[in-house]
Figure 1 (spheres, rainbow over the protein chains, first blue to last red):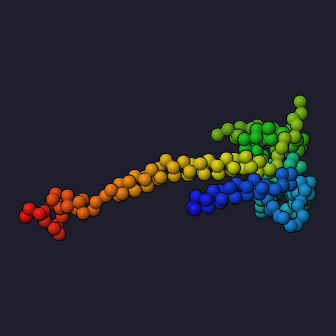
Figure 2: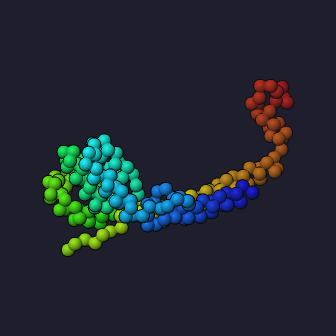
Figure 3: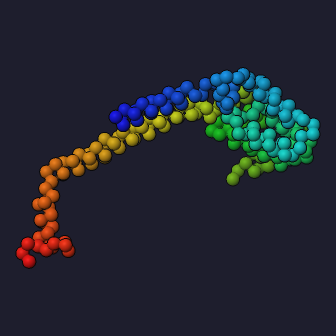
Length: 141
Length: 76
């Protein structure tokens, strides 16, 4: 009898894990069955707007970045561009470089993401005078 | 040579969708295997031992061996 219960809960758990990632495109957090699901574009523009605030302070920059890093995604180049410009307004070069390190780490085993991001951000990095961790030699342990 | 845009969202979800069912299956298999290779033989061994076990005979053997304090061997 215990064996039957065991098998039942196990298959139940497995079907639950298969059905739980219900949205493949939008954000993988907050799987509501009710409520509107935010599209990727809405999410991106929300974050671009957040970092574009002219009087964003250092705390809000750090808070924003930490929250963004907590999501199951690598931020889009336009979000990172907005964040790097916020760093420029705050005269915070350290955070700018740290942002680059963070997104590289977020990509994890997917080694094609970071080079793409650097390619997309190259004009911004040149304009703002931000060196990449690779250029500074701090990407090696 | 411009790099194409890679997939940047839902990478963890994709990984979990693949690995979690495997993890659950393996864990379940390990538990079932342990049950049938260890616990069931053990239970059977105990049951078989006690099926023909004579407690009184065993007690008397121990008594003659002189290991008790409360009762002496029948000789004394």
